Amino acid sequence: PFWPKLLGSPGLLFGSLPAAMAASLPMHRQVPIIDIAPFLASPPDLPLADDAQRVAREWREAFGTFGFAHVTGHGIPNDVIEHAYATADAFFKLPEEAKLRCDLGKGYGPGGYTRQGVERVSATASAPDGTQLTGVEGARPPDSVENMLVHRRDHDVLPEEIPEYKEATYTYFDQLAKLLRVLMEITACALELERDYFEKFFDNENGTYQSEGNTLRLAWYPPQTEPPEPGQLRYGEHTDYTGFTLLWQDHNRQGPQTAAEIDPPLGGLQVRMPDGKFVDCPPVPGAFTVNAGDLIQVWTNDVFLSNTHRVANPPDGDATRRISLVFFSGPTPDSLIECLPGCSDEDRPARYAPIRSRDHLLRKLAASNS
Image (tube, rainbow, N blue to C red):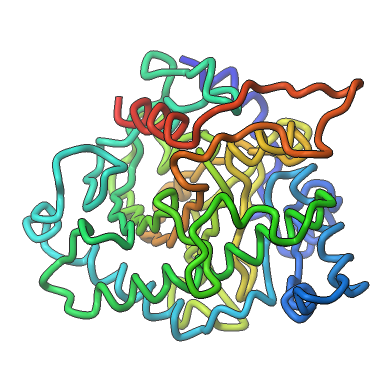
């Protein structure tokens, strides 16, 4: 299988080190924190303020080096996050038969509930344009995760046992779509494009960037009361498929998710560093963890990276569960993704052929459900 070759040396894991030692690690081995509040405060009809320009420079550096950043100063209300998290927790605590009533039987992607053993995300490993897919033959065992998807469309599956489910998830969805617009504007400024350049690739609804390419994934990683299969992870190595992913990691084993002091469960996100080694990427208080998907890398001709990441198993004997709120963004399905202006020249020609957003997503989902 591919994964022993991919992993190589396990590298340093921040979560397994004393705090003082982790803090002393060089910054090039840590996903950066970017406060976007100055950009939010910069009026769109005026020249970009100096501190907003600084945000754009930090954004370009972070996504050119790591493909990841922790985003603070985002303006998402704490109660929206807490309500969405509590709703996800309530859903995954339902009896198995209730969750299975939300299963459309179509695998991961179309919507509704996906039980453990269906998704095998490591099979989607590929070049950014979707070529050179790993496939099931070279993948890890199926992922140790359950999912519930929200598309914010009429066909969404709504569990009748949780009356507040629609309001909580749709409110969260809209807030994240609003934040997405800001992140796409930062990206445009970082690439020296017009601030509203990406608007044509989304449906602009009341200041949000909506699209059929946007999906909210409620993910539950159950306690590992028994050892996983050889090579099995909570979620295998992969890159995300389309646009930016806005991830709310499980910030607190007990107490509010949005607390200033947090104690996250172990067995979480790990990100591949520029030296090829994976490191723990624990949550930052109040922050969303944002990463660029494949189509961002294709769009920017490798100026921004769609970086490989995974969700690790907890230490032996640790039986805590983990919930994640994952907002996947993407341009409208018919969008043709090709090298952006300013991202190529004679010395740096376009490295990827144009690709339709829908085609790339469907290819990846098919591999994941293999």
